[in-house]
View 1 (cartoon, one colour):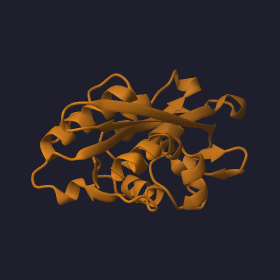
View 2 (tube, one colour):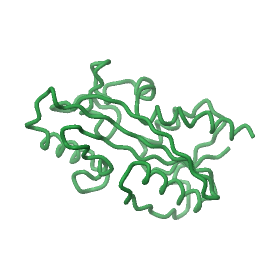
View 3 (cartoon, helix red, strand yellow):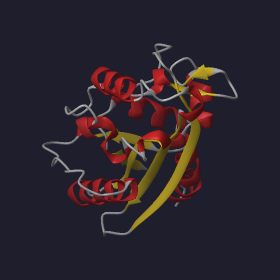
View 4 (cartoon, one colour):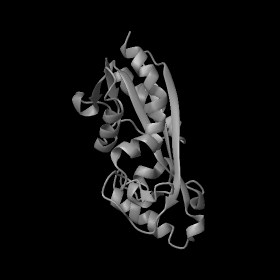
Length: 198
């Protein structure tokens, strides 16, 4: 069975491929489509954006399509950057600028108030318009500087207390097991395996 994963983010694609490695599913990336439309993520929630991406790409491609929207929610910033996580500093996907802005914005926040969570909503859409969503989250703290070279986005700033490491320091296997995206994808995996077996 072919599954379109509606992302241009190679880090996400790598994580998803690893999670689906044992399923009888061929993952197709956006780079394998001819002139896919650009989906404007203008929803007010992660679920809105995930549904929109999955449904528009499923309709365009004719494939069962998986899309996610995820981001960082910081308690001390009233939930920011939230749905604007990838473009927090202005330019879409500029991880370094986003991390710099977050550190600067949180400079005066004391260590005891640096709680945050990564949230993810995964949407699975059929070409006929049907769509289901699944969510996941992981809680942690925002560091005062970057640590680690793995992962992407805010991973070098996000420490997972039970491991004493940032997401960027954790091996991919552990990150996939505990991450917001990993949790959401594990919820949809049984349905994907069932569909692949039909």
